[in-house]
Length: 210
Image (cartoon, rainbow, N blue to C red; front, side):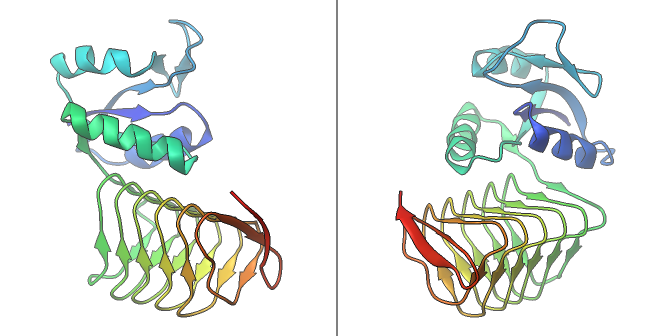
């Protein structure tokens, strides 16, 4: 299948590396609203303009896409746009990731090198489970969430839509992380976190509302 990668930053490079190992996928180009000209390339592939070029690419046989943008709000918007255009949102799952047979994985998901998703976990659409992260048994990761590298979620944790959990954080079992929450890097979350706030520290404490 011919596919495009939406985004041209660091996350896009990670996604390219994963998809380049999948023989079922032919990566055609990167799409980004920040366009530096026709000569710009990543990994030898062109970086084209914004979403206005997608219809033309679809006429030339592109059928799939994946959103490779770290910012949850922007990633969610691009996911919706691509879905409405009729593109198939594909997954990029590193071959070294460990995923339990009973885990459920949505569409447009990125699962990085060495990540682990265990028994009964549910990962929604357009989620990033980054390098070495652990999503334990029966966790529920809702749509458009970003789990940072090395993060550990204990069992039966819920992470609601568009939440971001920073690198190396630890979340205690049965905890709920609210919508649009940012958990700072290296935090230890021992209590539920309400929607629309930023928390950080060990233990994690409220810094401010969003």
